[in-house]
Image (cartoon, rainbow, N blue to C red; front, side, top):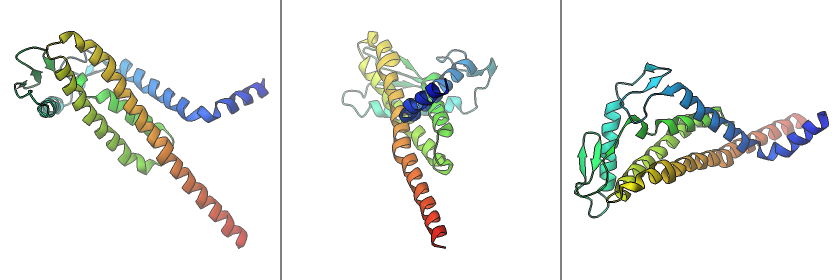
Length: 208
C-alpha cells in the first residue's frame, strides 16, 4: 500500500503545480459562490445574507461605464453610443448593457488574488504581482464589455454566447496565464536564486 502511494506521488509530482493551481481555483470559485449571494445583476452585494455593498460601489460602476464608453468610441461609427449613468446602448439596434456589480470583475480578481496569495513563491513579490494582475484583468474587463456592446449591435441574440461563453472563458484563460507566468518565471527564478545562495553557503562552509 505504501509503495503504491509513493508511486502515485512520484507520478503526480511533475504536475503538482497545475494540480495545486486547480485546487485553489475551484476552492476560491466555490467559496465565492457559497459566501456571496444575491443577484449579480443587481445593485447590492450580500455576504451570507448580509448587505456588504461598499460606499464606493456605485462610483466604481460609473467609472467602468465611462471607461467602456471610451473604449467603444475608439471604433469608427460608434459615436452614437448612448451612455447613461450605468447604461450603454446604441439607439439604432442592439441591447442595453447595464453595468451591475457582477460586471466589475470582482469575482475574477478575488479568485486570482487568492490563487497567487496561497501559491508558492516570495511573499514580497506577491505584493506587486497581485495588483498588477488585477489591473490586467480590469483592462480586459473594459474590453470585454465594450466588445459585447459592439457585437450585439443589431444582433441581441449574441449576448448570451458572448457574455456567458466566449468572453468568460477568455477571462479564466487570462487568470491561468498570469499563474503560468508566476510559476514559470517568478517562482522558478526565486527557487534558482535560493539554490545558488544555499550552494554558495555550503561552499563557503567547506572552505572554512
